[in-house]
Image (cartoon, rainbow, N blue to C red; front, side):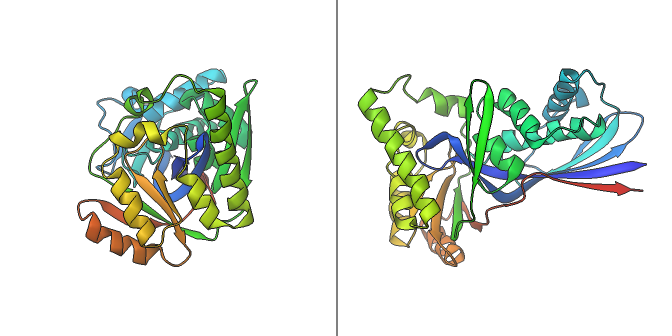
Length: 299
């Protein structure tokens, strides 16, 4: 009997001015154990996963079936055991990780032999933008863009920083967060915002994390419009800066926020910030550099 496992990392998107184009994989994971059997079965082992009534209603199954249908294939039945460390509706890419998992489930079960770019194209068509799915798929900090219905992406070399995340108990749906954004920007504002984003990326590549942090916090594309939706937005940024963070921004659509901090300081800053936000889940995380992982087993 064939068995395989999938592991997909969480992700943080936007990173300030990199709206819908910059994503970063983080070491929290959605994992699937898959075993062939005669009937479909989904077994969930985490309170962070959404409830479902029937396997056909399960989001990962729906993505897998959609992927198989696109390639004129039928999904063979199997048992899928799922665990997750990624909270829902918190800005850590729970939907993107599930999309990647569903696509890879179909890829393995139907022997589609999809390339990374094939998977990214499918995932972007489903998600609507490539930032989270690109990071979860290939790992690291990824810059991606869709032009003429084609996705191009580039992984930034390893960053010499630690990551701290601040996860509140409240949810914030992406739809609500997107409704807060303006429909248009003036040419002047778009030019400045684009320059800020460009300088942030250049600073990260150069290793000038002070300047990168400054640019992270000067976003004009989305953070000014979402700030009121995020608990403790201004105070959190100010406190993190006092404790030594380079920059603190909204993770994805929020309400989680994320700091870039000096290497080796993630644990210390996390503990210091817990005194300020005792009801938050605050922890240091690592950048995941592997992205989607598949392990095959014969039992």
